[in-house]
Image (tube, rainbow over all chains, first blue to last red; front, side, top):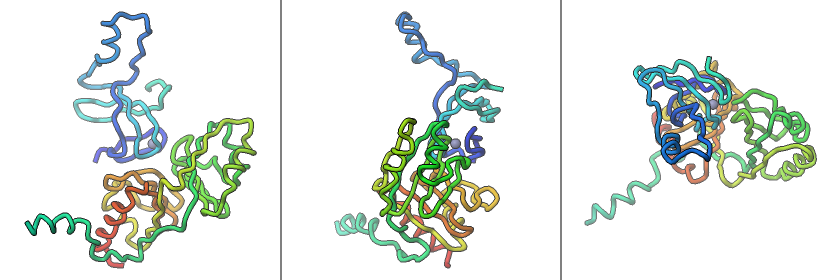
Length: 87
Length: 185
Ligand SMILES: [Zn+2]
């Protein structure tokens, strides 16, 4: 089983976690056009390779955190708390 | 048609070996989910006599009160059902500070699992490393057992306390009975 390192709890089994989509998506201001708003809501970079993602330790500490995962190899390069900068 | 009538009844029949003295209900408990910001931790500890500075995924006990740190700012506080003083003590001790206290006494049920194979029985359907180095006595965490979310607390080298949401308890307990058939005590 894949092991994911929660920034709060340490190494834990994958099935305790839930996926939260791309990380660092900045909310668009209310003044944007419909097209820009649609892009903010639905368009993601969907990178092949290193990808910043949100994860939640749902069956653990319950906290959201960020991770950088390689979408080709499924290797977790790093995990870090919300609000922290990636290393 | 007789087969159709029998099939559902068979699924709900008691499991063989359903009396297993290693698996028993804990005494009635009062339970609270306590959320504290950093600056309220010391005052809350003084109010309840519990050490809330202990690290995450650890349980602390003081007298008959217990606190399991399930998240960086989240504790499950347990006490015998007769202890009605917790909300009042916290309210008085944290009068000018932020905290959140939710009574979940009737949301969950407690199960005690003991015996030399207790860890192996949990590991049958829970992927946590329960070796005594990775999961020592006093460690407590939310985790997953089969498809149920549980709180697992190692209370002794061969003894665990499980907190299970009530509607999941028959599911978890019957699975433990089923697993127990592979581990004669
Ligand atoms: Zn965690």
